[in-house]
Image (cartoon, rainbow, N blue to C red; front, side, top):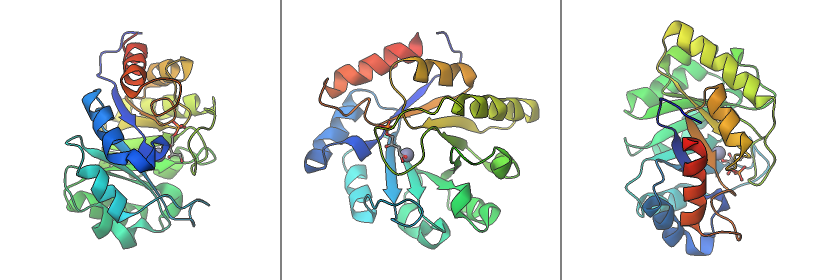
Length: 225
Ligand code: DX5
Ligand code: ZN
């Protein structure tokens, strides 16, 4: 598939071997990751707890690639100084988790970070529409957040298309990111056709079936068509 915009691949370290995290982060960096997707889960907004500041710092210490930090945290405003402390990192918060979405987005921008808002599969595009002009990224969750290795929800493609139409018509800058169940197959291809330009991939990159460089090459070939 030919796309005029460069498609960014963001491996999600949630699927990495945490006993070997530094080496795995360096491996995806060497294999050409455009961003490193970092899933912070608080056990409240989503049932699971993943990791916090110490692990995010350890990931950052092993790569020069910007971190794409996905905060699955209820009221992330309380923890912005913890996770938005390095300006080159991108911060993604959930529309469903913020009582004051506009204020939280504005605060992140004020800290100098790129900012994105994620919406769950059950959340309508309208939940993010009023902050869209402020965003660098809008992230469509193509699985229910909380775990890697789930199947892509096909209805996500419609949501990506709707966002793409709104963004193009209003000439907003936001890129569309898609997170969950992305493989080097129709899920990546159709997401790009629908308008996504940032693809998160966890279990497609970190798995027992192929090496990290092979998995990254497969994904890159798929997105280049
Ligand atoms: C899910 C996370 C995703 C996850 C993606 O809650 O936000 O980033 O790690 O993993 P895969 O690509 O395996 O669905
Ligand atoms: Zn994520």
